[in-house]
Length: 212
Image (cartoon, rainbow, N blue to C red; front, side, top):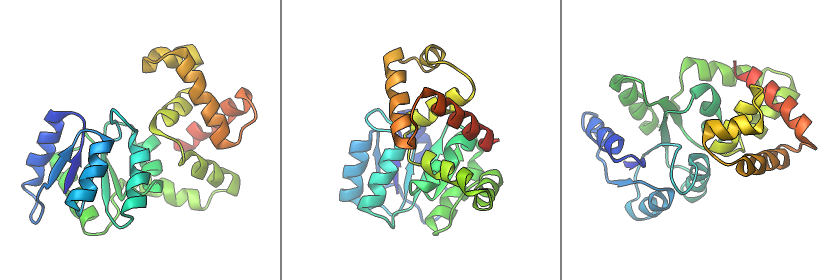
């Protein structure tokens, strides 16, 4: 398996944890999306464990790249990001599982085992949310699918916008410039087919409500 994580300590911890899972050997490690993509081509791993936060590319984009290169390769995301917000987009981008970093080692091992065996790993809450989305009115389901095309940063800004925060507050919270926030909001409007900032706010509020 290949471990993709930009924090060396956590990467080493994952490598150590996997030694206790029968039949699993770490064939390589990567700290960036570029190194991960190169390693997949050279090492031909049968499983990828990865974080969403990478210095050169967000994890959702890397997931889509991996899916294009090796659609059969299972990927398990192990992340600090809120599962309610990022779990479903990860699965829609091609991931086979999502688990939070704070979960105990037995749960992480279980997730690794299930994904490597061809199963999908998701918490009961996320599984129920996805099934519920299949029975919702089409407009709501379309919103969910559209949000699944966004990057990790765009999802963060969509979430904060839906919580009623303005651009300045979002910039301060994410420690980015106001111009960067406005650029992301423009990209959100383009990707979601929205005409103006007001429509984006209404969309974001509905989207956040649907995550609850």
